Image 1 (cartoon, helix red, strand yellow):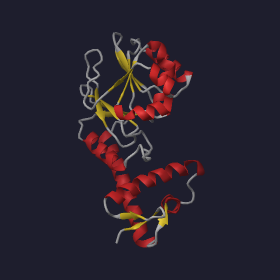
Image 2 (spheres, helix red, strand yellow):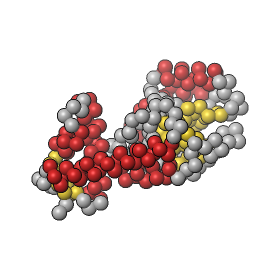
Image 3 (cartoon, rainbow, N blue to C red):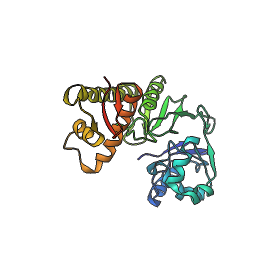
Length: 260
């Protein structure tokens, strides 16, 4: 997981707080000192999953404002607990809000898909995008309902693709020097998976199937047990979109079939 410091010796902010782990906080502190930066006065959360928001507990001595999209409120409370949430100096960030740091724009973009209130942060002067988990360095983004929504995710990719971005700093993995190529690949992957599901229903199974069976059929028998639940949630996201598109139907017994 990546956390990023943005700023100068006069003012800085932190994008994402890392895990609920003192070692994460120590690594951030060392990076501040090594780069002669001011201690962050604001922590901007891309979203409230534990690997991005859990570390706010250990950053409280900085008295920084923790900023996030209002649609992450419930998820943040589940991640860090009610008591810690009440003690935070929290503030909502809306779409297009400018979290300027030392005179340089840091634009918040509401980019749902991975979660409802996911934010990306756009530095227009540097043409750098901090994408959180919507665009990753190597792997594909996990979309798991109810927080994740595939239709929202595809819209987010379209929005990010319209930016004149030079490089992407992802929530996981290395910097992405070919951002538009990466975005196109991620979008293509989702659409190919959608077509794979439809083809399965058209050829391999004209009968209703449950989510478990469909996930096994699409992802294969070699999928490790530890990641299978995540694959099932991703499959659920695809089915949710296909139902909304009028291509798939869900039966009363929580099975799925192609809509004739």
